[in-house]
Amino acid sequence: MFKKIALLGVLAAVAAYVGLTFFLGSIVKTGVNSFGPRLTQTKVELAGANISPLTGRGSLRGLSVGNPRGWSDGPAFSLGRVQVDVQPFSIFGDHIVINEIIIDEPVFSYETKFVSSNIKDLLKNIEDFAGSGGPAAATKSGRPIRFVVKKFRLTNGRATLGVGAAALPVPLPPVSLDNLGVAEGGITPDQLAGAVMRSVLGSIVTGSAQALSQVGSTAGAATLEKTKAAAQKAGDSLKKLFGEKK
Image (cartoon, rainbow, N blue to C red; front, side):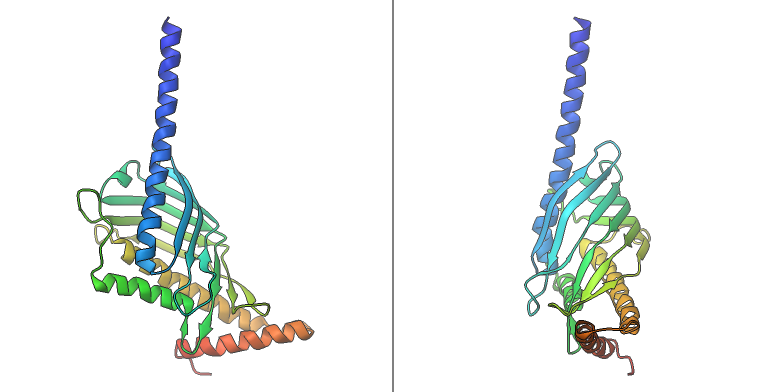
């Protein structure tokens, strides 16, 4: 009898853990898919999330963010492996503390024209949302949600500079941010997204400049010459965008 009761207790605990894990993942997925498009004014889709209720560790999968209006129909970027470490149960409140976010192998499609780019326009959409006084992310009680991110790392990223067959693949320098929102006692989702996207944009520009300086270092045929032309055109746009002298 005792063994049966013990077994039932174990099964109930396992079921509760699995159910709570699914529930936490569902909260994250729903939050991203509902608030993300308002924040970026583009298509945002998170396929799924898995968060442990005991440790707060988990992962996100299939996160993609669409391009702003005026750019190609594909995504502005999609993320590879995203590992998160959240303080347990802070996700249920209005002050979410994230100990660590690690994004590995993200892919950015970087398009430029005149003095703008799709990533810069995406950042502008986020900043416009913040300045418009739009509806902020909030708990069911109506309290605004604020975030603290103690450690953010983006590694092994790459971007495609331009579009089509002549697009130039560009490896990106890593992005490291620490203690976002700590001094302020938490920052809003748009402030967090803006801080991250500004650093990502800087990484793309740095990576693009390095790639442009290396294009043509090896002997090339017609395909390489086409890539060089596309890269040079994109490079001129970058210089105009950031006010650099040719």
